[in-house]
Image: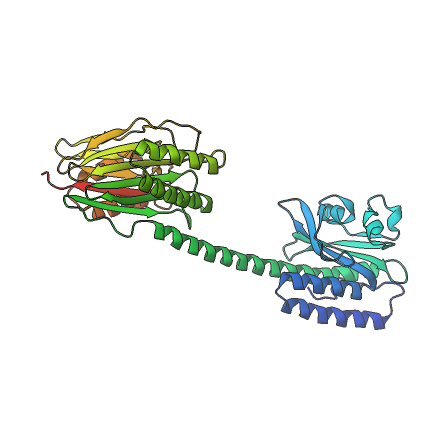
Length: 432
């Protein structure tokens, strides 16, 4: 649309003014196309509107469809204070709701006019021309309001002139908002990338080398950051701490809670020997920090590397699977307590115990493994996981971890990963 395509002849408007207005619109249009910063663009539009319309003041409101209000930081005579107007309230709000132009020759005679701003600023509003701003798709992006036509009231010609200018302004605003959203998305992605690098740095760099045992782990977040966690802690020459956890939800919030839990758990392990005391104190701190509805499941086991006996507390986590190679049977290391952070004063008196015989395989996972679904919303399930463990018992732990992960991804197909996936495999040497 050209700047003059909506302007019609109007009584009392000279040809000289029409030519001058068209030239001005062309100059302003070029300036709007060149400016990509939204705040500077809005200031240019408001200043140009007042000048072109031969008015005393102008205001420009952007429309927030989701929150249901107009907002503006660019209102001449109001300083830089942000103004918010609910859709449907006042003249600008009514225009935002209906999409119709309002031309009021006497503001105080119109019941929609709110004189509070005049009383606060000392300004006297006489006439108002208020018009919606719509982008090239016809979607309303804002409202422009012009006050006090110098030397009279706003005419039909003024309406057409503002419509022509407003069309160009709306397109420029839409483009600037798209650029701003893109840049903001880029900033967020960069920040999440840093957060992801930090989170990855908290995971084990490599598995501990222990005679008679083989260990491997893997964690893949479904977002840039996740709430899954696993760790190995060399407690002394013959005892290894093994932990896997899952914060409810995923994303940045879950990642922050995971990092907090990791640091707190490590601190308590350094200070305490009894895993019951460790969990009681960890639960107390997490319950204090977590919002309502948030919790963390965690399995923590202390493996005696000489006897291959593991003592553990399972705070609501998915039961690790112990495959006994000699019998071909599976054992579940079931929950011994409630998840962490749910309730104050939870008791962690029950400690589970299991033994890894030669050739046995222990697999710890988060629910992102067996709850992963295919395109028909069928879950991967624990039976498929057990079958993979039995069939891959002769593989190295690293190979088995990769095989399980690839099998889950192949099962999901085009269905996107909806939860973090973490697994650890521990195998005792020997056996057939």
